[in-house]
Image 1 (cartoon, rainbow, N blue to C red):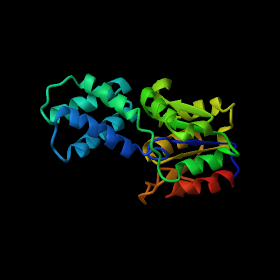
Image 2 (cartoon, rainbow, N blue to C red):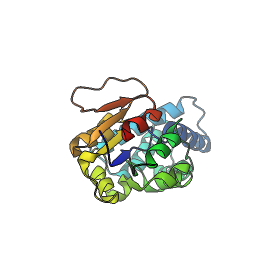
Image 3 (cartoon, rainbow, N blue to C red):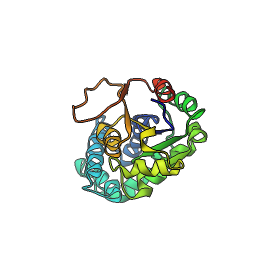
Image 4 (cartoon, rainbow, N blue to C red):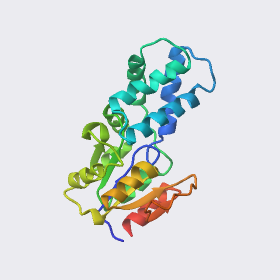
Length: 227
């Protein structure tokens, strides 16, 4: 299949969000004086639950940003304003622009021949701050962020917005690449766009997802994207 545009998820597909999150929450844990070695894992679990609720439309992004720290502070019985903690965390996270191995090379290769759009569920300050610190920015033709759109993947409008931003690319001529079945792949399925699942951990996808390609290394993307 020859494509006219490639849409790619940001976190855990191109950006090393786990590393970024580890650095940022580590800073916040230090500021709060928490000495529990498992605190990062506690935060990760609570944060993941909040993002899943966000994808289901159960909470807004503004509520998510406070709720995850409200739950975290409650777990450790710390009486601090969760909104202030959340704002501090966001500021630190926005400085973390590290990429996953091979991500830059893959995007460079694709962008040399096709327009690339990044389509991400995220907070504007965080995503734009990290992109500004990343060498990816000069290869990205469109940057679609849920925090600016008012809706999030798996809403297909996120992908439609990317196609529009690239000049009105036909959905049948685009490929969506991402690591999340419930966000990236489901959005592609709902939008009628081919899906490439980035699956470095070798998970097994339920049958309800339509996956045209599956890769375990992002460096395999150019061969698929460029034919």
